[in-house]
Image (tube, rainbow, N blue to C red):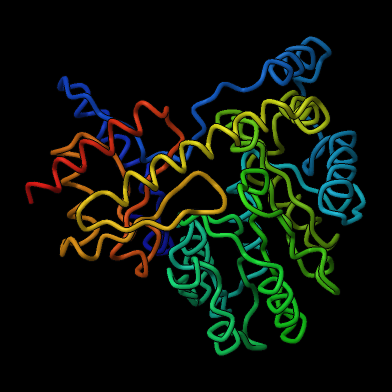
Length: 386
């Protein structure tokens, strides 16, 4: 009945675990939700007011497939000030959320059999989109002993003129790892040497605790071969608004916009205007949110390191931890299920993010400090009796 390509389409397991957790709650169970990567803060008032103003100003109609011109100009100004890279509006594409910026460029650029290198463990939609396009997904293992950064020596072995695309994500989901400047410099050199397009997922660029964010697009020769991806979902607590944006070479942007036309026309007009306010308005709420995340990070890392069989690095970015649970002797999925069903804490198996996630779990600390402490105590009590 279904087309064969549907068999190659993956999913994002966090939503499946959320459904299981909700079912337990419907039975009267108290569940601590550490599975969904969604800030537990409300969208700042100035952004909501900007959306309301845009609605009443008439931004409720169709617009250009690539996004409203005034919005794309604002994105150019943002990237120039924030990343130090100059773009023109015809190099910018607005999207409903960040996922289209993963999926559609892969559809536009990757032919059957083309090789795409992606991080593993990594955001599952990368591999799903590569497989759906008929590409050859080449996983690059992110290793704990490198703080979940790229193993450059391994990348050097895997990248070649056959590599159509390389996916970079920093700060990273699910590990919270952050690539160093030396990493990015060598990745850029390899991309240039092998004529490889880089999809740089920088959605967590503002949620960073140590050091500064650096974009690979700033390195020599990289603006011309980078799709620089960002979105408002995480930074501004706008997950439900669905607003993403990307900068890329004009020929890619033109085809990307054509895909927009065919699939969803364009990102919602009044949401785009609210997104401009997010970038240009006060940033104090973002700084406050990141400060709270840092306190939660420290609390959950310290707590997890006190649980039998767990060891956990302190991530430098995003709002996830990726503790090593190999000493428990249990497979990741089995332990994640036990933690949900017996301890009442929803988390994800590391294998939700690829084969190299075995031996790990992912917890999102986008929840209150009180709930994080409750979750740690529940898991500690459960593990003490195993």
